[in-house]
Image (cartoon, rainbow, N blue to C red):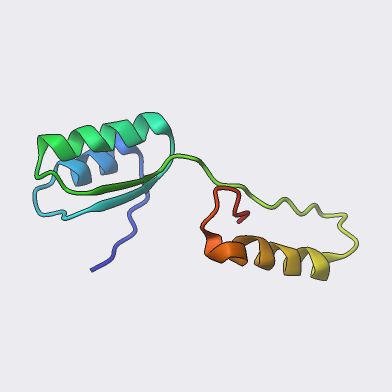
Length: 91
């Protein structure tokens, strides 16, 4: 089963990280919070933690963009270039 649970690490993250029935966690956020997830894993069932602490790279398209179709095409290209497996995969 796959679930997405947005929330603050001190609440949702801690509960998930320490829960013995959670088998693994993937996380996107700060290095400090990634470290907390690693600690939660060690304090519980040693679940694998898949942290992405490099952040994301947003595409910014402003209201006065004159070539909106081209911006949309480029945004789609950016996220899927190299299957999104690069740290600068704009989203």
